[in-house]
Each structure stands twice: as C-alpha cells, then as structure tokens.
Length: 252
Image (cartoon, rainbow, N blue to C red; front, side, top):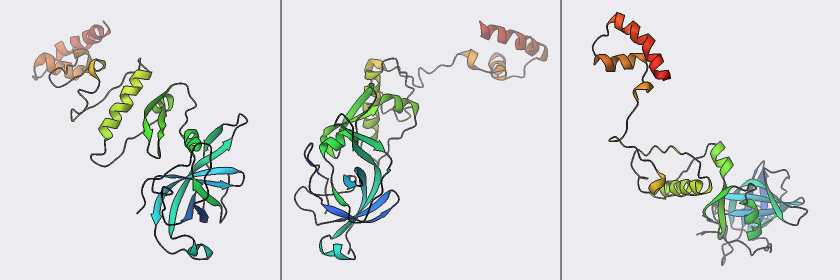
C-alpha cells in the first residue's frame, strides 16, 4: 500500500528512489522499490528527474505493481506513471524558478528522486504581488497554496471533487480570501441550494424569492403591454402611443 509522499528537507536533494524505464512525450514510467519508511511515491505526489542540465518535475498519476523487464527487475517492484508538468532551473540569484512545460528530454535510467521543499516552494510561488493563500498543499503542509488573483479573475477555473470532500467549503474560502485581498471585487453567486447564506456575513447582499424584484424598465415592450393590460389584448391606437412614450420613460 502506498500512502502520501514525503519531501526531502529544504535545500537537500535526496538520493534517487528510482529510475526512468520508459519515456514518451511528456509522460514517463519510473521503476520504484518497495515503500520503506517515509520514502514513498503515491498518486498525486511530485517526483524530480535530474536530466540534461535541468530538473524535470512530474506528478504521479498511477502506480502499478507488476514485473519490470530487464536489469531493473531485480531492484524495482512497481511502476509509476508520471506526467511531466515543468522544469526547475536555478536563476542567477541562486533562487529556483519553475517554468511550465518541458524543454528537455528524458533518457532511460535517468535518476528519479523526491522533490525538495525548496522545489515545492518554487512550483507554487506566485510572481504577482496580488495573491491569496487558500490553505496548504497536500504534498507538504508547510508550503502555502497561493493563487494569483489576476489569473483567477481573468480565466475560467473549476473546483472538482466527489460528494462530501469539501467543494463548497473550498469555494467559500477562495471567495472570502478574494474579497479580503480585493475589496472592490463584485461577485455574483448563484446559490440554488442555499449553501452560502451564512458564509460572508455583512459582505453579502442576499436576494431570495421573497426579496427578488425586477424594475419595470427591464421589460421589453411586449412584456410591459402585458403588465399594463393585465394579459388582455392591447388596444392598437394606445399601443402606438405607448411605443413612443415608453422609450422616453426608460431614458428618464
């Protein structure tokens, strides 16, 4: 059984725990030994692959317990499918910088290790000054999960999960932090199940069926005629007059 992954201490790259046994585009298969102590690679954990002058970062998407052909069979008893998500390269200031996408290619037998805390910090760092913290990442509880507010507001995003895992609570946390960081923001929340009525206190203007009202100027001409005549057919001469007066009234 594989449990949650560990990371190596800050600034110290640990020993290899496996090696690349096959590579295809942005995916790789990694041979892994039997889990021991806190050296484990589970689904959702990050692995680092030092290859061709850069550190490639991949996320484990599947772990298979099966035989591995060739010389690696004696050392490894499982395969991990890894999706490569980006690269980490040292900057001139000696800090680590994470870049999405892979520009280096893997080779068979490239060593694979657990990511360090410094590398996780680089992966989840935000480059913009306006960011919000919505919790801690699952891979290492000491690393904050930060979100770039500009990217959040200018792109589509989704909160996904099975029933009961806390999607509604997660959305409430995101919106509260967003309002705290960007007070002028205006959010329209369609709460059909009445889940968020107590989440935002005085910051929310709650509209329910008892308080929901539409001003008459929102109606088009035919709808206004239905209101004026109570559902009865309109009088043609009067309708002509209304067609002239209603736009004037709306503009006022």
